[in-house]
Amino acid sequence: MSPKFRKEDGFVFKIYSNEEERMHIHVVKAENEAKFWLEPSIELAENYGFGNKDLKKITQIINENGNDFKRQFAVHIGRRIDD
Image 1 (cartoon, rainbow, N blue to C red):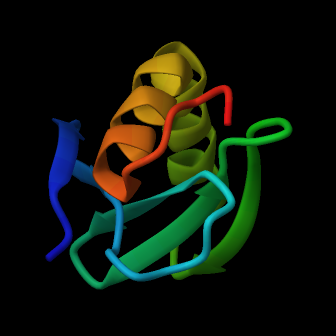
Image 2 (cartoon, one colour; image 1 turned 180 degrees about the vertical axis):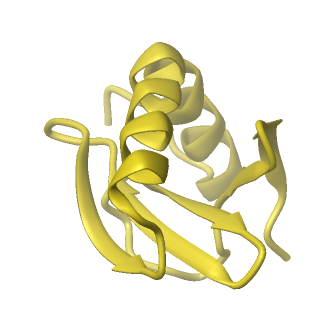
């Protein structure tokens, strides 16, 4: 199960269950997908198909919602942010 945490401008932000513990978020739109680390800082981990314009917009959305994504990740994975 991969809950959708946010949908904005056609981008869907979600987490895949049973993946690594380091906080991250996946972004999907059409056939494209990217993975961004949320810690220790927000940065692109993997990109499959997004162009620079989309990556810039995605990064902006993640920067604006980073703390919320971290909380949602912690709840979904079952640990507190300060663990």
